[in-house]
Length: 318
Ligand SMILES: [Zn+2]
Image (cartoon, rainbow, N blue to C red; front, side, top):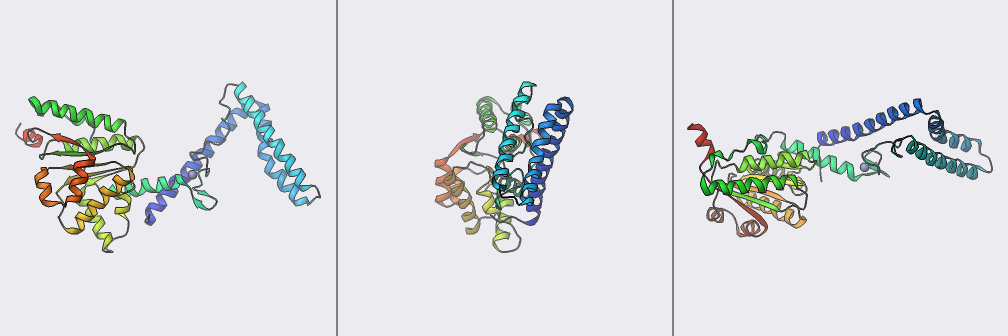
């Protein structure tokens, strides 16, 4: 995956912030515990001094250097154990004076033995998605913005079910969730409900790419023909959730067809969920899209039919 420089810098800043926050938190915990309990302060000093002791031993170049280093190591471990016991006895969690890194593997450095840590990859992906959707024209709404008063009779029942399904989908979202296909005429709340899903899923810490499908395709096309940097196609096949709003609004071409197929098919293959919405009927879709796209959507997406009268028109006529 290629990342542009601003994405990389932003990700590095996030990792550095994590490290600084962990160390600051550790220092303040250490200070407050040391002030209250001198016996823990003595252990803290001993543990922190171990590295100096080892340096001194190495510099002295005695015959028994290895033995001395081993002894310092053992004493240090003992001191850590005793400190844990004391912390517990004084009512703290026993790991209270371990530095509270977000990632214990790389200690919030972003690197393990010179190789990028998984936590850094996660942050990079999130930053790339933020960059990708920063100009998204669609405002993220919440489920409370959706009102059933604009739907009547059977339509209202259907829309109530759709609302419930979308709410449940959002709150229980994992990267193994199914893919959804929201289909129905314009102005029935498809974009609103998918943006509400995006909002909840984002707030639960997942990466979400949400935009009008034609915006994504425009970026993919520009990158493909070297007119701009980035790898939107790759990103859209790896992000936790992709929401392609308004399928059918894009300019139809063999390029867009193949990009759409590639996004849908790769994500299905990886077991990653996608949400697609469209104002088209299935007959209209069949006229525009090749069979490979239609068969994936028909067979492997859960379908939600949106019913009713255009809500925007109803609001305007009020
Ligand atoms: Zn890490």
